[in-house]
Image (cartoon, rainbow, N blue to C red; front, side, top):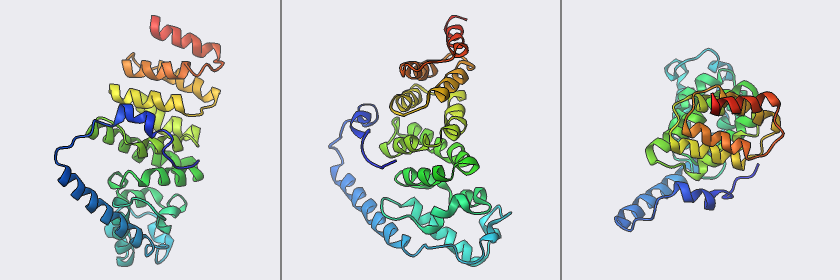
Length: 254
């Protein structure tokens, strides 16, 4: 999976507001500040190498206060780097996250919902390469909430988080269980329905997983956002099991 702007042009129709010339000076100033933070973050990442001390110190630890002072400082530094990350190499500790004992607690200490959106495509790929429980945990507890948070705050989804969603599909089982199912079972807004439907349309999903996703959607109450997602699944024109087609018919006629 390569990072890029493959979807940015088409996605901008839904997710980029018209440019506003007012406050141009303020916007330029804020942009310069963000660029400065990015440079600092890139420089700092070179000094955030492997975790100092014993990796077993993370096992069974639920709060940063329980860690040795050396690890506390390391975690605080990592949080700042990830909050201001724009590009460049990630700290080695972050790359090791899915393989560390007590990764759930360590993730919570690092506050992923505060990370920059630029960090998410890279982090999703790291967790997707590991797969299984680490990927499922990261998808459900951080990727999906971050996506919904961005939509709520901006009434659109930034391209970096859409790229993260695309990358998450590398592990289809974890994507269905950690992102698709919790999302489809929630009170989806119309904008969220557009996002998920567009994701389904653009993504390469195997037919058997599409059938599972369709059947799971049919188990929920009817709503416009869910109907949009179902339409996107059906428009892929896969050969579907008879049971899945029967569920779709019952969903719209029952």
